[in-house]
Length: 514
Image 1: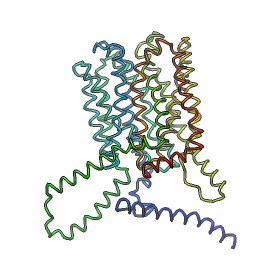
Image 2: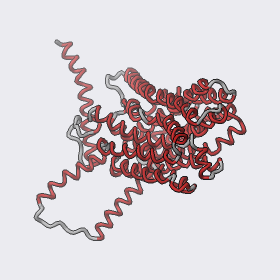
Image 3: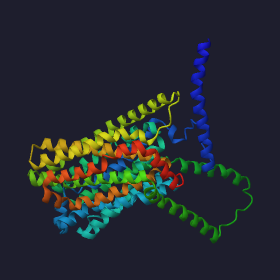
Image 4: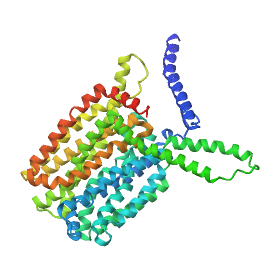
């Protein structure tokens, strides 16, 4: 009996500790937003939604990101036809391709700001409408200016997919399930690098390249309709502010017989001024995070370099098969499947591996401290997962480059491309999870901050790609890129593992804890 009593006490200890933490968390929410959830298991809390609901929302967000990535690469196989019909020289043709990434660099700032003021759902819907409009205009009139300008403006709307997918999953899943949540949202999008060029090759060869843009717009219109039906608001601050407003409503109804004062121009201006002030703070938040937090700067530089190399690869991959191997546009586009295979393995298998490593490190620290409660997770638990990505990315780059230079069998080149893309996205996935763990409710601003350099380099790298490979060929060209990556990326895991916690604390002090 005594042993049973002791066992019950041991079990009750962690449970009581967890309940105390939950009550304190609910009280913090009440103080911050004017309302809180009706207990730790309130079904209105996105963390407590059913798995079916969470997965459905994740798939919708994934479809939106899929459209973003397909649009990025859809013109790769048809770039020659577009250049011919629009009378573009090779450098301008590459700009018409890569200007899309420049739009993806700047679109996240207003999208993140508005989503952290008013929630995720409405800004996602508005962004998709914007994208459909501008993407449909790109080929109209065979205008060089409209093509480049339309691609840029379409990307501003398309950036909602990349900006909001991770934060929406963070709204619904705890840190211990971060890899699984990112795998759900990434299940469909990373077919984009293969689907885009395949669609581009088929349409440009069998129909005509303007239909590339109109087909994508039709697909996104379908995604938008699905989103209107399935997508629900997930952002806790927005949900609790609405709940607080609803709780105040009955008090107003009690005195309904007293006429409400009519809003004056001064009151309306005060409301607008307050909203504009909040918008200004929200738009500046990503810049504050980027310039004041050392960890953000490390992650931004590394994500930017990895993504720049990736966009350079996908922009020239089709031309390799057409010019060096003499394949048709359709056949050349099929090789992008290798890149998608690598990305899918990284996101679907790798995401679960990342969660497993995260849990094992929590258990290790619990055993080392002699406590029965698992310690809170920390971003540094993501660092070990970065290592395979750092090793595979340059290895695949060397493999792909030298096998292409010596015209080895196509399967050898494709395996190298798959290894490169798998390493690239393992590394990006780990860096993304690290930032989301640190940023929590400001995840959208953090993603906007760290991805701005990625998209700018995604714009720049494809422009010099033809010159790079004309001068150095694929072998030495990829070797140079791989060596630059090794110099900048290899110190990152030991740096974050040893000093990450101090660097994060320094950043929080500089930004006032945000």
